[in-house]
Length: 142
Image 1 (tube, rainbow, N blue to C red):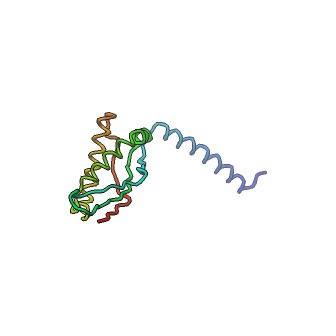
Image 2: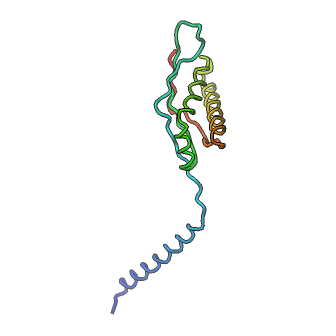
Image 3: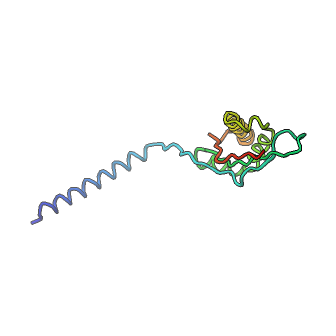
């Protein structure tokens, strides 16, 4: 004769087996939305900025991460890395000391770069691909 704890153990195993099958069937019918992923643009961006008529050069160093949704968008961003880097460098070099020195100016610059990158990728691929752009490092030398 089987003892009560062993019967309980068998019953528990049987219930967990059927529960696992039911959960797996529910997951098969669901469409899983793509997860967000971050892509670091490496190496760091280092460029001069400001008025070229002054004798002292000013530099900015920025590390940037792009947020994309799904592996396909991530691959597109990797494939168009040179285009994205060009857009970023051109916008960074056009900045003035006033816009770079204040926090609101940096946020405005972040949004400008994001829109420029989205527009360039849309022109190349037909879709914007990038959801957000983040400065992970932002250093100015005056």
